[in-house]
Figure 1 (cartoon, rainbow, N blue to C red):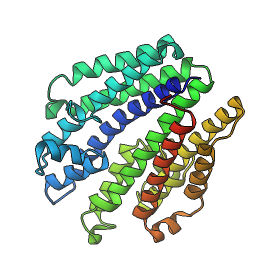
Figure 2: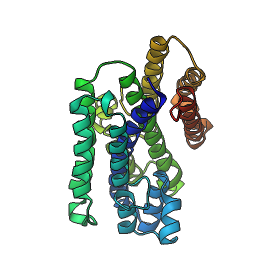
Figure 3: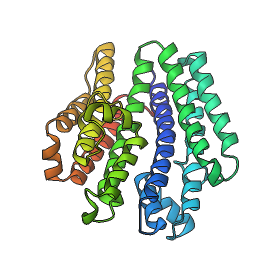
Amino acid sequence: MLGKTAGGLFWMFRYLERSENTARLIEAGQRIALTRSSSAEDEWASVLQSAGAFGGYVEKHGSEVNRDGAIDWMLRDPDNPSSVLNMAEAARNNGKTVRTALTREAWESVNENWMTLRDALARKVPERDLPDVLTLIRQRSAFVRGAMHGTMLRNDIYDFARIGTFMERADNTARILDVKYYVLLPSVVAVGTSIDNVQWQTILRSVSAEGGFHMTFGQDARPREIAQFLILDKRMPRSLAFCVDKIQSNLGYLATDYGVRLSCHDLCDQLADHTMSHSIDEIIEMGLHEFISDFLKSLAALGSQIEIDYRFYN
């Protein structure tokens, strides 16, 4: 496969996953804000930080953060390269580039995702309509995945799409966890309180993990078990362990198909070993923020090495 085609598939699915994850972050911010006694501005600044959009927001709007401005920036501002609207357009543009590698159903779902979100985000979203718009964003992304899973050959095209999806998903889950521990928790005295428990329930909802968690651990949402579920449980499709496992598998398929093992395969093995080599108690003892920071750095290095090894820009 041409490197440009591989890169187009990889980034198309990263963009689609990122748009969905942004919607999830906004929803989590909405819910967590209801449990906070401190200012809403602090809350939405932390959500922007989690999305990697804080610097751009401040550059355009100044340091004063408000709910409406933050949501509009993350959903539809043309100056925010990671806004949902820009991500939908970028995914469509990449889809056009790799059109011949996609089935008709897969391409149409990507194109319809762009057209639907373009219309839904043509104007600032009123507060009363926000839940429906966030649901729409998630649904359209799910339609693309469904078309991909249901119609595409399991070949290198599929592998690059899956690698992009799970690279982005792992990044998002790690950031949500980091914001919970490092930014969102009001104070040390809130740990174990009803406020803390409500926030953890919200984190589970933001990654569609609430049902699976309760099936596994029961109804009590304890922070230790939630962190374990979202980091180490390979049955949970948004956990760090699950995502890394899928990246590793699809890179392995590429190595077999192409008959060559590259540097990115070694980096991925190292990331998998690091992710799964500690118990949750060891991770918490060493510092969850430190663990996640290391994970994100290693994930970014892996993404860069994949681009180099498979010559995305050649």
